[in-house]
Image (cartoon, rainbow, N blue to C red; front, top):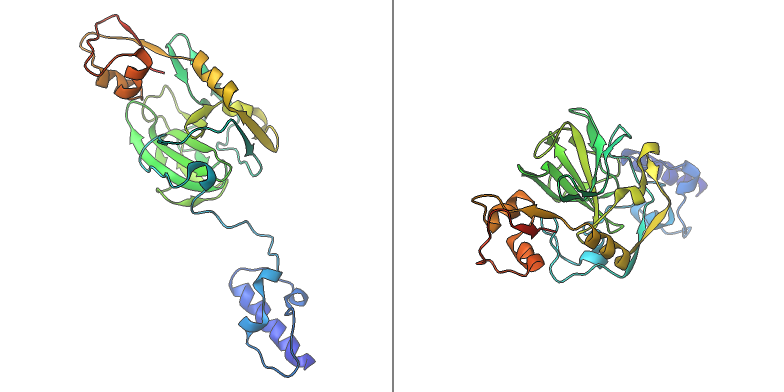
Length: 289
């Protein structure tokens, strides 16, 4: 009987090796075995009893508790009927630096000279540098915006964040693809509305832009801690204080202004208490965020 057990153990180890598993022969013993009842390998081996020390399975619907079944591929940030929770703890474990460079070229915040908000930060890259996923997740959007982020990718993560990677020279992933932290997702570039080669990197939760520097220590290529707690009131106050305005140009329309600034006519009308049929004049100031 002992020889039969040794034979069965070796068979299990060889079978697992073919699957890429790393199992020590003595650990592959079946949990229970009746002495007089012959068993197949599958019957003898209880896979739930073993720890392979590998990565956890990727979720096909990450952060479902936050986003439910809303999965708007091909669009930026739209979550009808959903609201940011008053408080939310974001798990930062497993973070991977998205760029080989740790240099920050431009920070998150309002740009007075351009009178608009910068909703992410810019990381130094050279043309063709490998851009990597910051966390495990699933690619929600891979598309192109000539007047904005150029080639860009948005990934939704299990911790609730969605990360955006803009101005890519090429995207290496497709929509609905599951990716691991550190996996190549694109190449550095300057497509879209970009001055010089860089990665525009955003972190959002249910569309609310968060300063990546609050969660990641870019100069040292690591997270600022194991977690970050989002406070809705503080985030809303920060967003309100960073309102963005534009002046109407000769021949402008609301739709043209919306396209140029990456927003919608509906949003402009709401912010300025006007309708889609309202007359706008050159020199007039409109709030766009």
